[in-house]
Image (cartoon, rainbow over all chains, first blue to last red; front, side, top):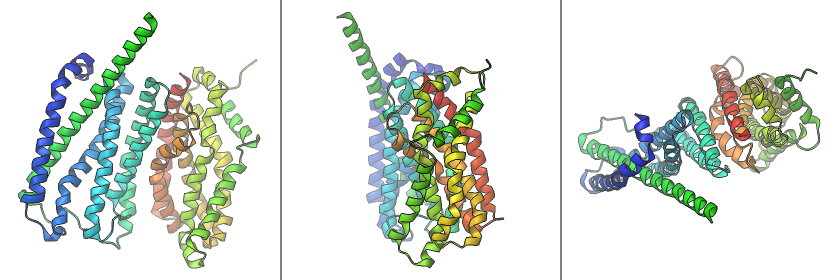
Length: 243
Length: 220
């Protein structure tokens, strides 16, 4: 199955219409879920009133942040084992998007945390700390790629780092959970207190789906840009050698 | 003439470099002591406050000091071509990488551990707790050096890669720092020391392979 996706010509033909389609459908669904979240759903006093509407951006961005790190590690592994160039282009494209979604998750979490917890930042919330560590993993990945001389070396170094990071992520998560369970002074309101009624759940799930589709579209767009960039490099090299 | 095995050569060379001029054993020690010394100036000198954060300060100083000389560990071998020879030897490269990292820890990690009791006493930590805590600092320091070694190998071909190494390695220090700090607070016999040892074993089982893959990349 990987082989079928690894063909750049097939990818370019497919993504030519699939990427804009994903961006359009994702944007439409996103607008719907935000509209539902901001204006339609009733506000919930248990979760701090109107501020819980931040959930419709915050929770999807948390999902996407985690999914994009998994995607980074998976594409790194695929490139490392099979050397499919498209896998590396995907990894290169996912990294800045993942960092952006991680940053968005932290920012919306802080905005939501200020009125409900009384503070912008809680050092003893395990989820915040794990996401923060993941943000630094993304930054390190991009910095390492940027520091390498050639595309090939950037791909190899990036794949090694992404895999090392991926085996460490469960350990980081586990250790941060243990650590935060020791500081129990500040009580944290948890989403999983009451089961979420469908009036919230439906826009939230649609919002998650919207961000996933949008993310896929953005990734394909960046990959297309990378393919065009490499074609440009080949044309320049050909022209220089011919002249 | 029989050439020395690359393992032994790597080990001896790393030990020898520590006494050669420049970034030797003294640099991490000076950095470690200096970083710890700065803390009372910034957080205040009250004994009760210092004694409660003293072991944690030592962990931060240890984590940072373990990265000080990491830049040169593999870069020097890459520049003088030794790395290329090692990559062609029969001895697996991951063993050479492990030997280099462990030798580097012996010369610039272990002295820091020996230095924790005096600095800890200066930071008002209970002296009785500091000697058993050395085991935790030793285990944690080894894990720091192993992950730092992976970052150092990845950045071996990068000029001025020191800051890059820190950015790559510091997120990987999180589990060791957490369990290490808990272990020094609990004292000997607590469960956190076992978790700390587990993170070090985990690093020991993964880091040499990752470092050798990164070194092959640097050689190509």
